[in-house]
Image (cartoon, rainbow, N blue to C red; front, side):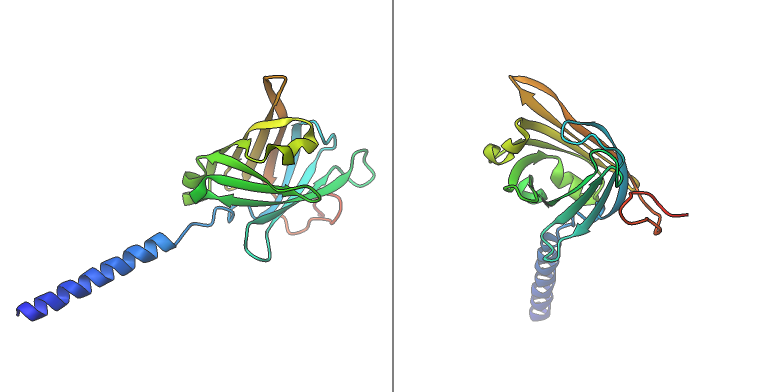
Length: 191
């Protein structure tokens, strides 16, 4: 009986260790709820005048984050343009990496990203960039960003510090586009 009890105890311990290792190995995908098409409005933005904004977020082919493809304004509208950036959320390290096409990658520290990743919804704060010089194409130093995601809405805002004073740099609000009939190139949906 002692040998059987001992073998059962070893088997139970092995199962427990295996289950614990599996639970630790599974990391929630923090990007999953960003993926989709979004229609939005620029409330404030120093770089783009055109509104509306259409945003398509897809997973990068190598699985290392997402690609954010923007269309600012409508074709023919003053200020109409497209832009894209790659974004990677690293919740365990409390980091966000962002790279606009044609510019160096910027790494930000975050607060609340690890908790955000558990459900994929809520809010997290992005703090000052580690490689500050990579973000100087804006001529401002990003001091803080706030991302908020719910099932059908997303918003984000950036604040900058200019001459020691913090002020709003940009603020976008998006609604998930559930229509499958988006007319390419104009950010609207077909009937």
